[in-house]
Length: 605
Image 1: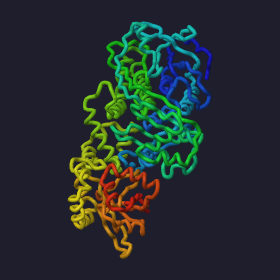
Image 2 (image 1 turned 45 degrees about the vertical axis):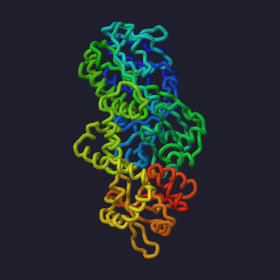
Image 3 (image 1 turned 90 degrees about the horizontal axis):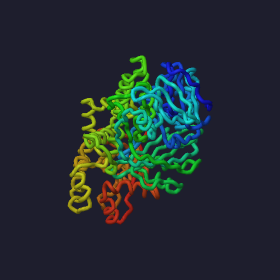
């Protein structure tokens, strides 16, 4: 980039952007359509490669450009997505190419046409910087710090550089980030500073790079393993980035000890609620050791509530609002704010105070949805502190049921993921038909409610065991004719399926209602036989003929059964026993090793 001091162009038709971040570069691109000269001043020495820089401490960690941001950049800079792909980025369909899991199960593959971009933050910034630097109106000056604003409380007229030079400007755009100097700068001019909101989330990152080859992640391009609050705190991600590498990251709320060495990083990955990333690590070689970072809080400056704002000055990006980056909305919000600034300039024709006020109102509207998503999600943990939004408990309860329902309804998954990608507004999830689907289908796969809890507590008691054995013929009949919708365990709120296997002696279909636990996209079942000494017949059928089908809430799913053994059985045993503790008792009283099967959905042709 250009290290020479910028020319002191006349204020009329000149804009200065402080900071060459994603926000600053987005602002420069938009301002190039309104000003003869746009000077971007950056205190860091900007690299000519995809290397992290000091001014972006989180740059080594996971970043995604969600679909709305990708589309906005493509509109502003045609061919931008192709540029990212040429640089090693990967476009990923959020519905069919992202392995995303929560509550012990994986969302099914549903092509959506909604793509996000997986690429490292330094590479994204490099590609964007190279595109913006080619604009004839734009001059990027690195290694140059800004120390103050010039002007009065009524109007900002330019900036003062660390060298003492001054640049006159019709508009100054502050893109100095969440630790920006805007409050001090405005105070020095006698201007009002905005009120602030701080939500303490205690976020911690740990990230490591691995070599990437074809076939590392069969059937998928990326992985996100979500925790279930309030007991699970860590998210795991695996994204393909440039230079044929995997970026594997751990992001946790209120984490005291970050996994900063190889052993603790691997242990934390293996402790994730879904094994997909641990299985990936078994196939790949590390390139780097773990690097860590922390983010104390979500932080927002309420510029839109100021009664008086100076002409010739606006803040943008993290200088207005910095929220939990796990949700992946920060870069997209920044470019949307830049577009809102361009709209306000076009409407007013100048950088007056009225323009600034209208811009801040528009920016607040851009921020509102992503801010609520982040803050509501963060308040799922009791340790989160700060101003608690009204209704957060109700919204989180609905969000949990929404996610559960979207795991079984393909159309709802598309809508839900489109909202997360900021392609559709949150109101799309509040339509009466959507709410009805959520209430009907948003049941916890582990089973919930007082009856389910009662069954779990008493499953090993003799009277319940006797009742279960006595009701087995009726249960099989009801499960068969209702296609798995009606079973005694299912009516109690426990996750229940109807298994149809092939009789090993007769070759005829044999039906059996069973409890299940999700493992990714697979179903785990246990041949407990209520603790009796002999293995149930259906388990021998599966060993003889692994192809079978199950019916879950009326959905017929062909599966292939695999008898788990060794370490895999140990893993699945740890997965199933919390949901049905009686398995431990049945294993002790039966005198045998209970068979554990994983049923993997078979492809349909």
